Length: 145
Ligand code: ZN
Image (cartoon, rainbow, N blue to C red):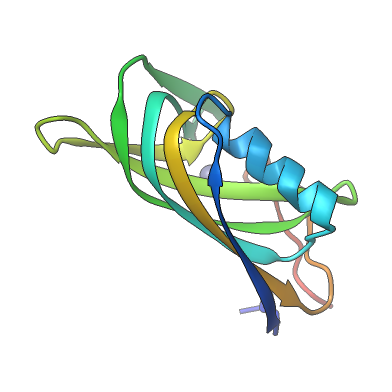
């Protein structure tokens, strides 16, 4: 394991996103405004519509599922690090429909909050930067030297 990082818990934010807000954009804006560069995020609630990414490992590109209906956020979990020196939120989400069937994927822009309660836990530690990884075509955490 060559990419492991020790962090210390600093403080936490708890809040509710405004109805109609884009979940990824709004959490990213909070991180920029508050100077959060390292941390974790979680949320529950409901979306009016969803936009989920799936990384096609063969084609090396994201494919997207657009779900234009209300769904419960049964779980949203992710992390905050840096990409190009700016806070970058990477999160995955699981959503449930009225029958309890679930859909999941990478939290893209376009997930619109109906009601969304979130927590952001801020960590202290050396910055964790995403860099382009040729093996996967993704921006991944760089191994520490
Ligand atoms: Zn992802």
